[in-house]
Image 1 (spheres, rainbow, N blue to C red):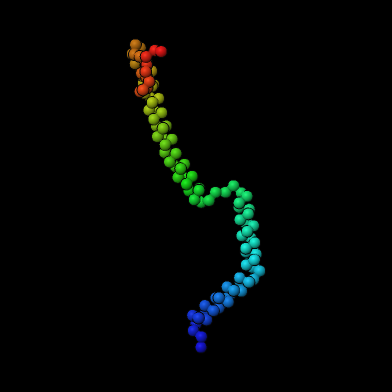
Image 2: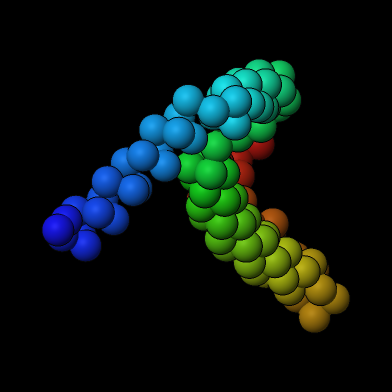
Length: 103
């Protein structure tokens, strides 16, 4: 008498062989080929490329937010210097590294 496990393995092998020789396998290969060609014609990116771009965008967003804070701080300092409460005789302050001497 045949062992049940061996019988199931034999049945599975026979079914796999039958599917491999059937027209369904040919149809599957043809559909995969057609889909591959269609996708290659489209402007698609891989999941890995998408994840890299998402991470890059997040880092860029953080840098932009930091720069916006710096600009606001500089604008508020400039507004404080230009306010009427500041003495009229005070000379404008040049940013660091730039000479305020006349040319």
